Image 1 (spheres, rainbow, N blue to C red):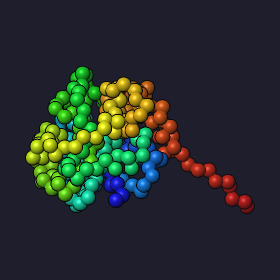
Image 2: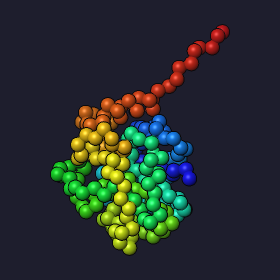
Image 3: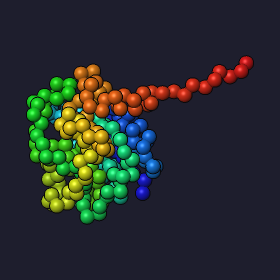
Length: 231
């Protein structure tokens, strides 16, 4: 089955989306499809107002439309756009386990800062950042209808209150959602997450793994030069 990858798209972080896609494509040994979860593409489907606490256009709830957008069939992967893959996505895709409704990296931390990138309030809650990388077993996530996602609270969604219990949440190795600036540098990190601010913002241009990110970004921007046609 070809991995279906849904990525949160924010108009302030367009280059982040394309760089993440490039990082996946460069290392993938299998075909991959990408779907940006962009606000303008969900007119009539996503109708809730923006919450003043959300730091990005997709952060509070649009990600939970992934099973709905997948027709509640098969598996799908959701990723925040402020990430960069350093390993083959096939390795992550192979971790799917039908025993679970959703699988994620179960971080155990609370942010120390009160303000994060772009001056946004740093909201603290149980299961913080669990929902930034999610493998959805779509048929078991049918409660995530467009109506539910539009009306449930942010905490109900991000704390997985839509499941019967936490036993339906499978654990992925933390290397698939390595929190830059929270965890120490790890050469084996498979997917790094610039959760405190990505290198595409000038004030975060020196964060861990930034050099790798800029190298991938440069390859996104590269244009092959062809010799001029003979006259």
